[in-house]
Image (cartoon, rainbow, N blue to C red; front, side, top):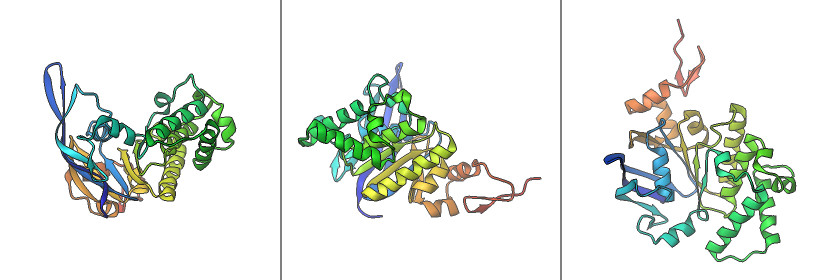
Length: 282
């Protein structure tokens, strides 16, 4: 892989609650090169979301505390960067696609109000001046990019008026508004039916390729990993236990935990499971 845009080095995080301290991340290291598609995969509770929130500066301290390591974005350590500068990066050069649209969208404001407000904040952080009409035009442009028909109608709609798949597209549009270099996607489409989820994942993959973005996909779904990523980090109990190019990992997993994840994937009798012949059932 090429030089990393994002480089996490020996990151350790602990939580202290009710007088007890637990280490949640243990010397986590991972790289996301520019223009690459990288996945961080593991079961629920493995530490994926804590890693993502630490990168984005979204962990509450206390109870969380970074005890070691560094997070380098374009060569600069986010953990030692002044808060104002880090805030300027978040939502502009680094953007998030969250997994739950209904908790990320405000039900009392229209989609247009929410998108233009986000764009206004991004413009202010970047020192960019744009009129209200220009912001609305940019919102319509991004809604078209995420394949939303009739952007004018969508901007006047409230979240409750849209389907789950449409709301997920709105979250992707929010992340793209400021033209970021790095996109972190946290289990996008998890709550959707499989057909809509496949459409959302294809859209996301098409967009990051079209815009030349780096993508870090946070997921527990190995099918998502295979469809969206070229390199995989496997996390278990707060540690990276294996990391390899996607094709190599599925063809010949080395760590017992990775093998157990692949073995847990449902399969059809007589079919194949990620390149391995499926055993015939008795």
